[in-house]
Length: 422
Image (cartoon, rainbow, N blue to C red; front, side, top):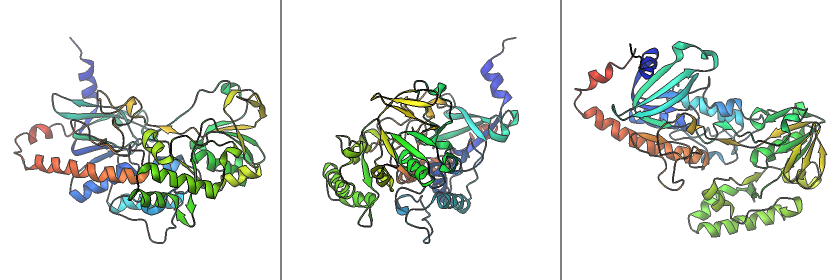
């Protein structure tokens, strides 16, 4: 008897027919698509590997985190932030907003469902998304499900997985080593010498938090970076940039931003921080690198509470060797080295995404719609406002196709319905 492995696997899984899009990810991007589809009357299924919505915000952010941009640029479609929220909501306030958002639109993701693979079946013209149980459902064969549907929305975002750099000698270091996603507060580092690898928004803010908790941080600044004031004369820097972009070309807005930064922050090269040759907005569009918004870390650098050091050459058991030949004694290492997309790990046989897990073309091109009912939300490198914009366009496009299909003859409905449950 000939056994066909793919067929054996097919019948070993419970199959679920989704009469609408299958959405992977219950973060802000997935929730935004769900809310917009609800408004259009389109059914959907959201698959989430964690046991809660917005797991990045709930489980992998530090306590003092606030939104880096004013709340009007961070709200999701169809529901603004509460009026009593501050201009820069806290982490807990944003989580509360997202939970109320899901409740308001009656969005109920399927939790503990890790997508193992997703591929387009050209024979049937359908997407087949296979999941395994995670969290409390890990190892549960009943949680192994294959979802089948006409549309697939990738909403796992730009920050699905930690970036863990391969640093020479790090395995020999005797102290604690952690990624910034595990960092909650500087309390556990009180009185310790900590080296923070990375000088983005997270690296800067973690160093500031360590100072506030009487630790002694050193921040590794290996590359050039744009640092801008969060506000200029009480006005959000981002708000000013958006205003100028309505009337001026990008290169001119970049010039204005750099002049304002120099007036407010001064010459940062004296502090060991070099600016890139490309302007902050152009650099963001080209490479996705976000400018750092200063919350007070620069004043700590000027006072010497935060040490700025160049790149790391090698770690030793209780110290780090820098590229300039210096040795620095340290007690702990925090890797503020960012995140990356995990789409290439599970999305199969598609040329829509690059090997880095981003849609080809990039912003401002049409990078939210692929072929065969494939969509992407939250990959424009424009934060929550970009995800919201994607969600509106994706939901409208899917709703149009879904409504056209529901108008057609239902001769094939019984055939599809037989896939509903095995």
